[in-house]
Length: 224
Image (cartoon, rainbow, N blue to C red):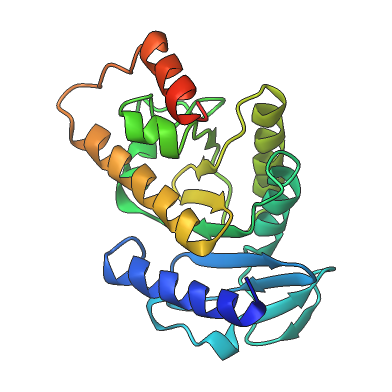
């Protein structure tokens, strides 16, 4: 993907997420890792009205070289790329949203975000297309401690042989990553839809059995 294509893809995905209610107001951000740096949505930008020419452009050292002021989440995105590419070198895009049902699950009084996961293995599509989604305890937006915790979590799961594509920042929202903006958006959509199903379920769903999950691993290469 060229830089021009990446700029267009970020804006296209941002508008799609905004139009369908996955993001609102000026919440959320999208970045793409280039061969020689990064593109990221500007700080306090509405993802529904992005201008390709005004996306923040940064060099490989994260020094801004063009566009509007970069999102304050840049440090988190860089930590995700550094940790995730150790297990999947094709990682090229990170998306963060405040998707309603994902956030709602972290607001329940019985949720313990210390070492927990956002969702059980509730559906086969979630297991195949998303996988484990660890919860990261609440830190204020932009707190460098949150970025460190996310990187440590990605490394821990990867070293255990279960590389992840998403984490959930408690009370804030998910971060997902993949090899392109379109693929990262699809991961986010599946994550939010599963959170919606679990949130609306009158009782906590029984997870798929280990035998069922293993079948998905063998048949589809599920990441669970």
